[in-house]
Length: 314
Image 1 (cartoon, rainbow, N blue to C red):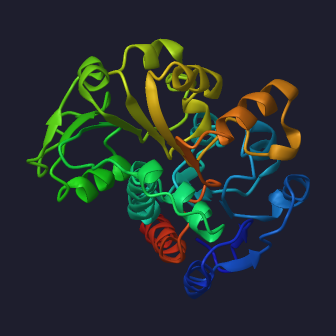
Image 2: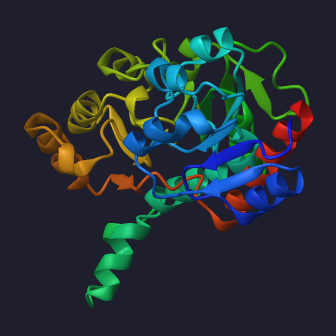
Image 3: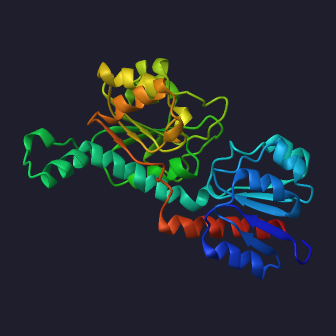
């Protein structure tokens, strides 16, 4: 690194990151509201760029980034970065799944417990002076079998949260071996075993060609009857139209969704809007606006993680 190397922070980040980079000699420009077009116009100035989800770092952008040495991703998802092209240009890529994995795990568990205990519906009813105990009788997590698909940072964090709930935990990760070492209560399982035995399946996967709409009608029809689905990873891992069908025939008993196929609601096509509207009307579906990893604590942890990784390379 040379003195006055410039880094662009293109989204909201904890001040710790900017302060740390400046302490390391970088000139830091923080423009959290900058548009993609403006980044294209200015990227040639920068040695590094910090992005979240709005700045697609593809070949077109990197070809303009004559000085770029690294890309730092606030969070985990790398699908918006052309990793192969970055590698061909010698551009290092850092992400920070360690920073928000605990937040995602807590959120997933919170959504599940909320759904099991009808908290969203009960809250709305009581605030409307409706007192209905029997309609809101819940079910307990204890005694259930929970399947975790993807046992990286978030999947393993979710498993830790389940340790005290007296559940059977099954896990599958295609790209790991002996990944449950240290998790005596977790059994390494096959995808088929998770589908056939799990009362709850939680997905913790990156979005790739392989995982795109992995959870479709065929997948859901091969699950245990009355399964509950949790998706806090990437919206396009789960096909909403197929989930809606599975819910309509009671194959799926309920779903916790923090992510969606199209999260820009003002751009929804008619067919997308119809499916989403029907899903949102169901009491057995609990939703949130992609905030599973979006805590005050994770904002700081993500900054710390990125700074450590950048410092280890410069």
